[in-house]
Structure formats: C-alpha cells, structure tokens
Image (cartoon, rainbow, N blue to C red; front, side):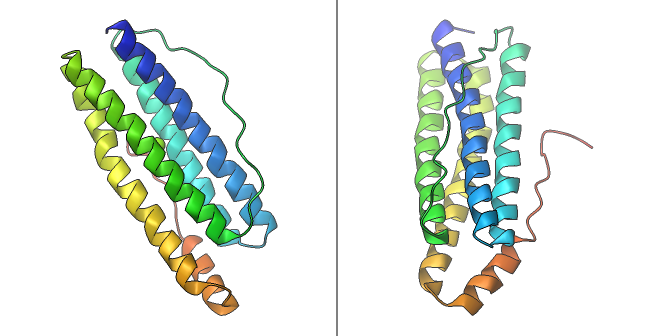
Length: 169
Ligand code: MG
C-alpha cells in the first residue's frame, strides 16, 4: 500500500473510534436526560462505529500496512436536548461521508483498486447513516415539545440492536 493511502486509512480508523466516542457521549447525555431508548440507539451506533474502526484496522494489516495508534479526541459531552443531539449526529455523518469520499478519490488517484473496492462498502454505508440521522432529526423536529410523541419515539429507539456485519457469529 502507498504511504498516503495507508495514512488516510490510519486516520480513518481513528476517526471511526472518535465517532464511537462521540455517540457514547451522546448516549450518556440521553440516559441522564431520561431518554433510555435514545441512549440505547446511540450506544448501538457507537458499537457500529467501533466495528467500522476494526474493519479498517483489519484491512490495513491484511494489506501489509502498519496500523497507527493515535490519540482519540474527546467528544463534546453537553447537549441542549434530543433535537440538538440528532442535529449533531446528522452533521457528523455528513462530515464522515466527506472523509470516506476523500479516501475513495485518493484510492482512485493511486490506482489502489483493493482500497477503492474496500472503501466502497463505506460509501454505501454512509448513504444509510446520513439518511437515518436526517430521518431522526426530522422526527424530533416535528415532535417539538410534545412529551407523548417524544416518549413514543424513545420507545422505538429502544428497539435498535447492532449486529456486526463483519463477524459471522
Ligand atoms: Mg462509521
């Protein structure tokens, strides 16, 4: 693997752990604000991000690259309300889409077909991530201050359970 591709992949698996950290922080906020369902959704989202990190890490090793262990930035821990949380989830996922697209561009420029093919899974995944986040943001915006509707949404979010697509168990 070329050094610039390796560097980008190393930055990305760190960024995926940052995403996990960010969603854990949001989950803690939701838990303490009394939204156990949203806390669950965000916690499962964090687990998904950690799985993304592991998947990139494994790709680096498979390609004979050396994984870099950089510091994981601490995430913001204060949020105004659930709408603020989901607005920031949507914003964050759009930023991640930009990072994934940049890796796809780089892999193309470097004629690194293996990395290009690998990162395409993430390109597809980001479509879903952004759509889900915007859907939830739309719902909490619509709900506004209606406690009944908010609790009903919270009950729906309690159902989410992450299944690691990279593991066969
Ligand atoms: Mg991710």
